[in-house]
Image (cartoon, rainbow, N blue to C red; front, side):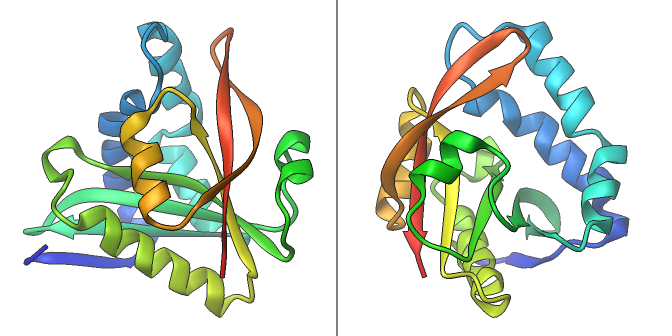
Length: 177
């Protein structure tokens, strides 16, 4: 983790956030997810323009991890009551915040970047008064599920996540702060 910096992202980071999102979103999708659906999801939800919108939204905090000066991962928190009814029914603690994005570039897996990024993100959630953090993670993503287990996130329910026309099954995980 030497040479890793985690900081709150600003408007000047929109392009870097998009680059990391484009490089990592496919890693979270289960086998069989269609390439054109994943590419469209990135274009629609993770473009540089969308990242700029997220950075301007006072209900969101984004963090960027840099390793040796290069973007290595990012997270996004979304404050407020969950917009997803299945998640809202599953989580147990309020006020809550969604860990909407938590991605690390492949070359930095296992290096401590994800742990450093998550620690900074959790600190931010606490500082804004959250009592819990929840997330959705694909049930067929063993790497992410192992990381969230190790980080103290417990499965509290399930929800669905749409990529293209494919409906995926996610675990809803929650960490009490």
